[in-house]
Each structure stands twice: as C-alpha cells, then as structure tokens.
Image 1 (tube, rainbow, N blue to C red):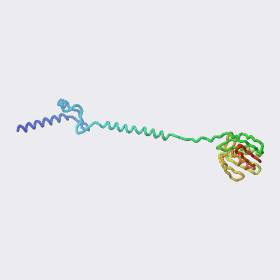
Image 2: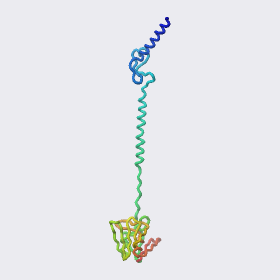
Image 3: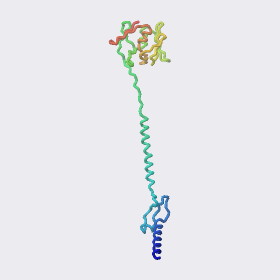
Length: 211
C-alpha cells in the first residue's frame, strides 16, 4: 500500500513540473516564454518551442526574394543584344575618267568631264548630244532626258537601265546618273541612237565618234 501511495506522489510531481514548464499561452507554432518556476527548476530557459515547431520561415523568404531579383539582369542583357546593330551599304564611288574623245577626228573636251561610275565610262549627255548636232531636253518632273536629231529620238531616265531608242526599248549596261548638275550615261546608246558611229580603243582609252 505504501508503494502505491509513493508511486502516486512521484507521478503528481512529474505532471506538475511538466505543467509548470509549459504554462502560459503558445503562438501558432507552439512556442512560448518559459515561466519563472520552470527556469528555477532548470526545466527551460527563455522562449522555446514544442512539437517540432520552429521559426525558420524567414530564411526561405529571403531566398525567394533573392532569386526573383536575378531575372532583371538577364532581361537587361537580352534587351541590349536586340538593340544592336544596324548595317548600311556604302554609296557607289564616282571618279573622273581619263578617257580621250574624238568627234570626226577632232579632239573634243566635254564639260563637265566624263566620269567612271560602277566601272563604266559615262559621258555628259547634253555636251555630247549638242556636239553631234542634236537637241537635248531635260524633264525635271519625270527625271528624264530626251536627245533628238531629225527623226531620231533617244529617251533616258535617271536610275533606270531602260532607254527608248526610236520607239524601241533597249537595256543599257548601267543607268544614267545626275552628277554636278549634269546627266551622265553610256554614250554609245545615245550616239548610235541619233545616227552616229562609235568606236572605242580600250588600250588607248580613246573614244571615236563619227556622224
């Protein structure tokens, strides 16, 4: 009987100590402040948790915010790549030609001087046309030039390789260009179109025109 009473007293002491250690309200994770009695008995110290509760959620939050911040750098790099590069083609170069010209075996010096564009000798149409006894008219509205001699007509248009020679369409090696307020074009189609004969000596870089 004494043993039963002694065992009951021991159980009561353990239960009361446990209750004292966990007295007071707990938070949503089971944490609470240790009571003064529990501190005195060495059962706990300060704020503590039970049932596996912990306050470690703040670290996971910091990790997620760090990862979201990394997307801005990748976005800026992609935008910088897309904003690059634009390429432009260089303009065709034009230089003065050293070609010598004879009209009916007489040295002729056209003004302005012949030019080389896209590897082709181009002559000033008005200067050569008038030297051949033809009329030369410029139509600003259509950017076209017409060379007429008697019943023969040649019509050219800027930036077009198509020419009309006595009513028939022909294709030139290069299109006429406007340079220094003058229209330049391959002279053969114009000179032969108004009845002249054209011969070119490539070795001497000399052009012979007869009409």
